[in-house]
Image (tube, rainbow, N blue to C red; front, side):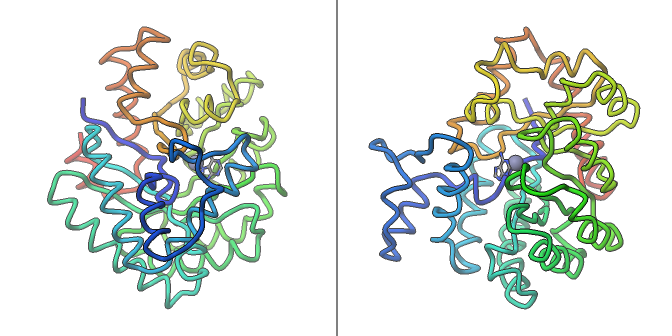
Length: 315
Ligand code: ADE
Ligand code: ZN
């Protein structure tokens, strides 16, 4: 089945073997980041973020990011993904310095153009890191706004959701909107319904995760009425312990409540998942088949941060 993925962190999609290889090339000791099998090792979300940032420390040049993007897009294509949106943080590409960011982006855009010819189209979403604070987010927003004329078509925010309020980042989201970028924000993963409401106040059309809306029926109705699209990553939520197993995950209840949902993997090697794995587990847990998955891919196409010509081609 052809798939659309809207929520994939480029750095978080780095296979552990890719990061270990780069660490060896650069003589960087990352041994604490991996378990005995060579997989990423963490016990909770705070440690996940630390390991994630440690792994990223080996990605140092535009060429490193270009190699990573090629590897990630190859793997996505193998999963039947024909279009993917990747979160990329200028913070990790030269410290959100605009001139450095342009170099990183040029290298990644070249790879994206090459991979497009091989059947997988992609766009980049510049991503601020919430726990780095509003001032650093502004620098990322400026990088996004200044490069909003090519592969970069969106702006978003990830990181530790319980740090501050989403509305502290309004300047950055306004800056990105004025540059014509699509907007999404992680919310309702570690924070509750109020965190999702704050994200809506930023004017986003999509929410990263958003699944804890299930705790507030009025919010679910509001999200459905606004047609806000949730980028749901069930395997990520289960791996991070938000729900004990697939059957307990609220995705089916949110769908039944009339919400527009899409399916993504977030950081697949960290969560031992793939797009095929997500679809297979959802089929097992909820009896979903072609009808449900086709509908969710249609919503993903409608909500994608791409031009109308691309949207028409994907349909
Ligand atoms: N960055 C990478 N993965 C993330 C997640 N699941 N939540 C918040 N920020 C992230
Ligand atoms: Zn995410």
